[in-house]
Length: 177
Image (tube, rainbow, N blue to C red; front, side, top):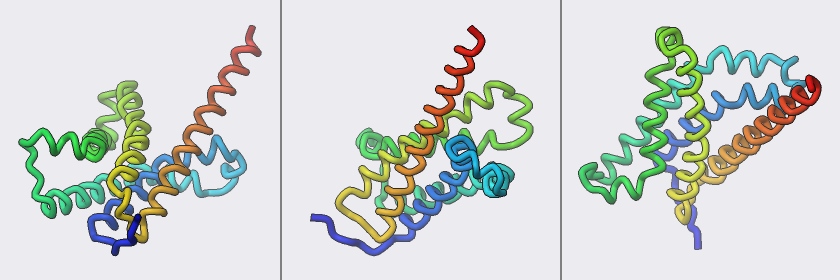
């Protein structure tokens, strides 16, 4: 039986990190899945502040993790810590790489490798879904349903976007044959 818990500061920071992160993925998904949104300023505005939103997501995730590390007195020399928190740790490592390279210098130095590195954001999206479902299962708070719905909506939008992009490439290839 699930019981509804109060919302902890760590969970609020985790939810805000998730929301900021989703805002970094949303503009491209909106433009591809809902082409009519190109006429609005929402995707343009989100794209303009994408790096800042990504850094904000990282800082909020750092706060989320830090509070939980202290609260649970986690021992990083114990292998069990990594097996229990593999999704959160993996996602945070990806966020470290993305945040550290979210600057013009890194874009210039890494060139095409920067784009490949930032594709890890989509792996992080799936890890976050796993993390939320695994860690919040059975201990729901008021924001748990919002987090679950949000991550799965962005995953569906992303998968729809990828499908439409593949369809477009396929039709382009057929056109040139």
